[in-house]
Structures are given as C-alpha cells and as structure tokens.
Amino acid sequence: TKPNSREAIFVGQNDSSAATSKPAFHIQVFNGSGIAYNSNLSFNEALPGSTSVKAIDCAYEQISGRALVVWTTDAAANGTNYTIWNGTAWSEYGKLFDVDTATLERNPTLIPNPRSNEIIFVQSGTRTAPLNRTSAQAWNGTNWTGIINFTQNGGADNSYRTVDCAYESVSGLARCFYANGSSNNLGVRTWNGITWSEPEPAQFAVTNISGGMRWVDAKANPTTNEIMVLV
Image (cartoon, rainbow, N blue to C red):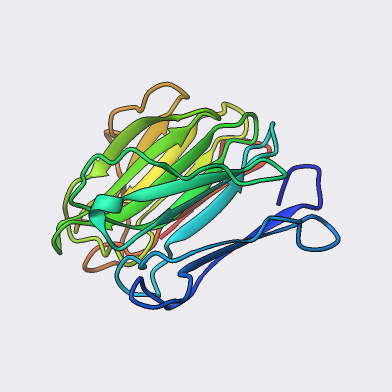
C-alpha cells in the first residue's frame, strides 16, 4: 500500500508459460475508488521453474510514493526485470544486475526502508541443483547498487524463500538473514546504505532442522532495533 494513501498495487502470476498466449504476470493499481486508468500491465514471460514458485513482488518507495515491481523469468539469460509506477504511468522495463548469468532466479522479495526511497531486493536461485544461492542488492531510488552473493552453493532448497531482510527501526540498518547451505546455521549480513558487512562471526544455529532451512522470514519491531526471525 502506498504511504499516506489509499492506493494499492496488485501483482499476480498464473500457470502459463511463454508457449501459451496467456500473460504469465498481471499488475493493477487500485487508486482508492477503482482500478486506476492506464494502470493495467500484463506480459507473457515463462515462469521460473515450477509455477508454484513465487516470481514477482512489489514495494513502494516510502518518500516519493513510487512503486517498484520486480519479476523473474525461466531463462537465466533474461534475469530479473523491473518497472516503476509513478502514479500515472509505468516506466520502461529495466534489468537488475546479475552476479551469475547462469543462475535461474526465484522468490524475489522487496523490503522498503521506512525512512527513505531505498528498497532492499533479495532472492534465491539455482544454477544446477543442488548448487543454490541467495543474493541481494539495493535500489536507492535511482539505480541498483550493493549487489552481493550471500551463499554460492549448498543444500538449501531454492523453491522456497531462503533469504529475508528487515530494517532496524532505530539505527536504520538493514539486516539480511539467509540459509547457509545445507547446515543449520543462519547467516547474517548488514547493509548500512553504502556497503555490506562481512558475515557475522557468530551465526545463529537453528536446532531440530534436518536437511537445511527452507524458509526464512524477518520482521522488525517498530520501536526498537529488535528483529524476529522465523525459520
């Protein structure tokens, strides 16, 4: 939902592929009373692997009120793409930087900074199973920066969201948590708006899990730097 507004964006995907005549992705803007004029956006790109895998996400820049939409395709060479809604029209499609053009991206997730137009983008992906990876980069309101691989290979299942991020509400730092290969250790890195930290020396060991983590979810306390992480 757009900050201080009734506007909201719906993003969806169906079970079609590029071999069909149906759109794989569909986006609409609700302006508070109905579907905004000229807001419908549909395009046909094959989904990344199984159609049950999430392939699109949306978030609003918290200062400008513009909306950023990202989506992935089933062709590693096509990578991950994005477009921006400025309140009246969609921008031309752009492409995110890719640290590994042989990787099939999945589960894109956008996390907006509540203090600025910055949005953190995280995703999981696979090159050749079980060589899975998690990665991130930051949208600063103008371009993409801070591209990084958290893990390059391991046994974490890329069909699930094995990475997530949340902003500390007081410090403004972004903490990203990711499944660290086939181990039960949860990796942690911090984004300060310019660079990523090195991996935290003391990773979180998660007990009672066998075969690696399949889902990571991070939620910030709105009044402190506390972040709760579910795996």
